Structure formats: structure tokens, C-alpha cells
Length: 417
Image (cartoon, rainbow, N blue to C red; front, side):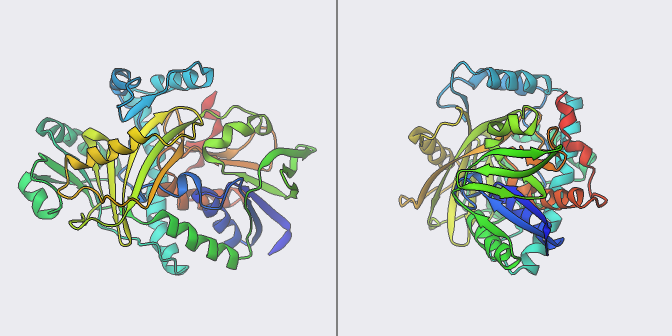
């Protein structure tokens, strides 16, 4: 491990952690610096899906019309807090321009490449590094109450099958209850993506921390990066709340906080924080076997070996730190439509996190304009966990001037122009 080749990874979430892992495995000395605790933020309380099925972005034909109907309603799963924010409305304008089939498929191809790569890498890494994080491959159910919505989804499944080889098995009401007895016999049916897996995110990050420490990675927590200092076109150090941290290369994996570093990156990164919520609790007596997304209510549930999580909703409220009790109640009431035993009264954790949302639904993984040795790896939307391993491998390949295993042009900053 060469100290003359030290990479500083700014951001200690799952993306930063996986970048650090692959860089350390390639022989680099690595320092992770995070303004909060390692593994906190959106990497902590999400639903833990490793989902190759999540190919399509939010920006689809018809999405703008559906969003406009509900976006200012406080009880909507998709809510925008009314306020004067030029960056937010610029983001939504660009989002609206992406809501067409051509751009949707282009983004889907970019997402598919990272999702497939990551899904293949996860089992290998968890096995090789002996990380116990309750990883299971039992698939993911997209459940529909309405027969109309269930039937309509067939077109989406056909698209995913034909374009990307990602297909689901349909279950009617009787077949669904036989597959998952925890459901009430009220749903019209579901689509089962057997390719999907799930894990417990906090245990993944705990295990990764041990692995990184054993690889010699230095982790500095509660240290805020305030600026990047450059010399002759290269960044030589990041200036932090506790002093300078020198490096020969840098990875910015700061998720939703990335726009705060815009002036130091040399461009405006169009990321908006999309606030999501979750409740973690003991497993209910009649606990589901398979993770599920309840499409009509935009609620997701994850049965874990040591607990149970209900999550989702999308709230564009800026960097708001309030825990909205109404949102948490919506998770419970949404699950109650579908499950016989939807939740426990004992709640172990009430949580929110800011998802790093890009207007086109794909991340940025690219060298930044201002410094030739600073790489951005941010903007993974709702798929940071699902894309983390593929992102880490790609970042390491690009930094080491190796042939990338997937096409990096998908994630270029040039698409903003």
C-alpha cells in the first residue's frame, strides 16, 4: 500500500464505503472522511433492496401529469413543499423534459448496467469478506389492489423483459395468497421479481467498516469538508473542520449534500434531496417472507431476520430535518391495506433520510471540471444500496486507468450541457 498514492473519499455512506473498498483492494491507501458518523444518512434506514428490477426511472411518459395532480397535497406519497427555490424548479423543469420514452429508455440502460453489475458483485463480496448482513435472495413482489393496475403493469414487465432481460412472474389473487400468506386476500395480484435480493443496511455498513479497517482504510467521522485546495490544476488537499487532509486523488461521494461543494467541483450538480421515511420494529407475528412494494400506496416493506421495516414516500422539502409524524403514519396505514399483521406497536426506530435525486434518474460518475484528480460518484436516487458495488468497482477502474467493466459515458457530467 503506497502512501504516495492516497485517495481521500469524501462521504462515508454505502457509495463512499464501496469506493473505498475497491480502491483499497487495488493497492491504494485510502482515507474516508464524513461530516457525520460512518454509515449514517440514507445508507442507514432504507429498505435494503438490491433490486435489478428497478430499471425504469421516475421520469416516464405520463409521470409529469400524475405528479402535478398530487405534488402539493401533504397526504400524497409524492409531496413538494411549496417554496421559492430556483434550483428545485430548475430541477423539475429538466425532469419534465425527460418524461418521454426515448430518454426513459436511455436512462434505463444506464441504470440496468449498474444494477446488474452490483447484483452480481454483492454475493461474492459478502461471501469473500464474511459480512453478515441478513442477505437473502427471495425476490421482490410488486403488489396491486386494483385489477386494472395489475393488468396495466403487464406492459411494463414486457418492456423490462424485451429490453433488459428483467422479467417477473405474475400471480393472481389466489396464487398470491398461496405464495405469501401474510397478505390479506384483497389484492388483485402481484408481479414477483425473483432476481431481487435484500439485506439489513446497518449491518452491511457495520461489516464493511470492519473490512475497511482491516484493509488499512482510515475513517474520520464528524469531520466536515469545507473546501478543496488545488495546485496546478490538481487537488492536493481537502480543508476540513479539523484541518487539512492531503491526498493524490479524491472521490466525492457526498450524496444529497453534493451541491454544497459545487464551487469546488467547477460545476452545478443538479441533485435535490428527496426525503424518505422508514419505521423499524420487531417482526410481526404473521411476518411476510418476501419484501413487497405496495404500488398504489407507494409503501415498501422488508422482512429482515432480526426485524421488520416499513418505508418509502418522497418529499421534496429541501434539507428539512423534521420527522414528519404524518408521513410515518402514512406508512402504517398504507401497509394495513394489504397485510393481515401490518406492523408492531413497538417501534425501534423512526427514521428519515435524504435521497440524492437527479432529474434524469441516473448518477454522476465522472471526473470533475475544476480538478483533474477529483472524481464525483453521487446522485444514485433511490438506488444507492442497489448500485453501490458496481459504482465502487467502476470508480476504482477509472482511477487506476483500467478498462471499465461497464460504459462510463452513461454517467458523464457532459449530459448536463
